[in-house]
Image (tube, rainbow, N blue to C red):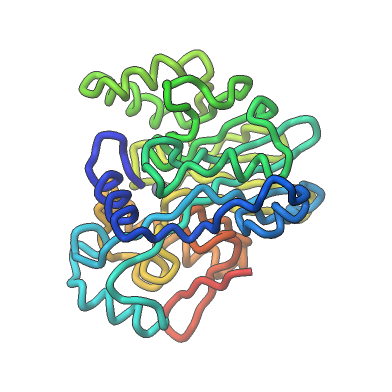
Amino acid sequence: MLTLRTLPVLVISTVLSACGKDPVPPSPSPAEPAATTAAASGNVHEFKIGELTAYALKDGDFLIPNDGKIFALNRSPEDVAKVLEQAGVPTTELSLSIQPLLVKSGDRVLLFDTGAGVTAGEAAGKLLASMNEVGIAPASVTDLFLSHAHGDHIGGAFDKDGALVFPNATVRMSAAEWDATKASAAEDEKRAALVQTIASKVETFAPGAEIVQGVVKAVDIKGHTPGHSGYLITSGTESLLYIGDVAHHYIVSVQEPEWTIQFDQDAPTAQASRKELIETNAASGQRIYAVHFPFPGLGKFSHEGERFVWSKE
Ligand SMILES: [Zn+2]
């Protein structure tokens, strides 16, 4: 969604901290047992994909003002407000969650995106705390699948000193996304440091490649960034589609997929991808994991009259 090079991440986190709206409750006291901690925080959701155990892990929240600068560039804030009002949610701002996905598969620990790390201030960067709640150490992650290299997806791969947070993980991203990431390093010091740190860990893949035999397949979803990729995670007859940033908001992006979003690098292509992905998966009933929809981001697209809607699990 956001790049390390662009302003929105700063604007959004400033807005959030200025409003003092951090929906994450304070941590329980150390005296409380771990089980209570996990249940109380609401930052972890355990579920199954066939035989696989998976966790939605809360990283943070962004609040985006409905000011016509990010959502629906080809529409007015009033148009956006109308859609939000019909859904019964506040019309002055759009709330986006961030929840990376973790899947255990045999002796492998698969992490899909990393949240924002230190790139978004107090708004995000809680992934490691969420992992800790379920007893998963960063060093145990064997494979890191990046949907794309925007700050709220790759930022959590680095600590405040720029060192790797998941030192044993192979970093998997599409070849086109890695090429674009390396190209961006030429004009940005932070980006250059990121590329240098991660380079020896990166293994690229072609669109649609089967990356983990029988378990993880890349799904080409064009437009948001040069090599944006979703992932289909399969176990037996069940599957889950990790959609990355093809859709950001669970109401506006789903009901009006052709509205232009500032985050989309190639907006017309992204809009076509969004519409097609929602239509196709509403028809098939595919189970979806949406990294920016309300926590835990699990659900399906479906028809409601002439439009599509998000139905959470
Ligand atoms: Zn994003």
